Image (cartoon, rainbow, N blue to C red; front, side, top):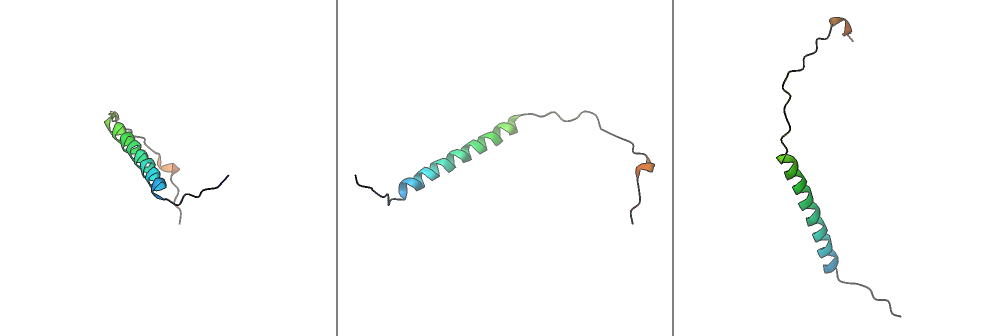
Length: 59
């Protein structure tokens, strides 16, 4: 039985390029789909009155 060593880098570079391209397409697709969702804006303003006794002056 003989052992062979792969000396060609073209197949590994091609595979890596395909994987990176696929990941890039998936990420862009997810961003595009999230952009299509219309999240509702809050309808009423949130206002909370904080009493002055809770504030402490730190020097």
